[in-house]
Image (tube, rainbow, N blue to C red; front, top):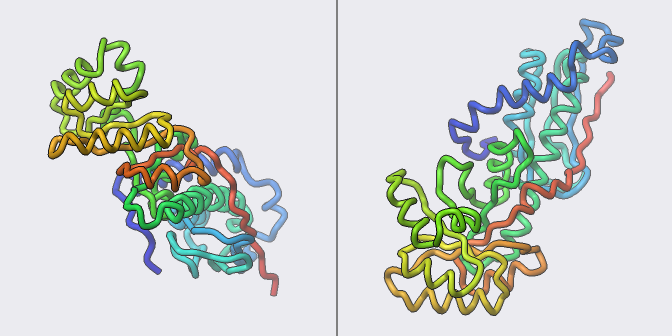
Length: 288
């Protein structure tokens, strides 16, 4: 089955990420797995215990590849696809010690990444038909930034900047340090970095300053529904020089539809990645 596309940067990160995860779990060796005969070969299945959007194939494959390259993993559900409770996600066969050692690390990746994908899918469904794009943020689990952003795409969301290096987001403290929104934007353009430049505003007056300064994207931080609607109307009055508008700040599943219907272009929320509600999986061994 075909999985979601992996950017090269993400692909390169998988090996080191998995190696770190195995190192913290296995340490100097799996003492309990050593109780099993060295030559024993087993089959196993990973089973979903709840409805979900799957994410994490490449990380699970890498876990077992690093432990024992002879372990075979046969996937029944692709990343980005839906699974229901009791669905078999994949089957595995190989040396018992490798399967036992990799079980927890593999499930940790699946439960965490599928959480982000499943959460994202719920947010995307909530704004269906509005044209709004759901964005993630930098509020990710340390060490899993690229993995979680991949999971967001599995759930139908879109990625905001990866980090501080691939876009400029001028926030409150940047504005205070620079002296004004206008000055901060001028300095950002002076960097000639060929990246998106976005400015965060906290009220209508700051929105007007950002628009007058030619901002290409404006983040409306913690605006009420009424304030968002007014911001959209003001932005449209600027015609062809209008900015893209992004709403953010304390947006929940219960409120996101109302936010989307104001006419903003994007909604970003850290809840997709920082609120990890782990998806329940089990790895069941078959003893013939």
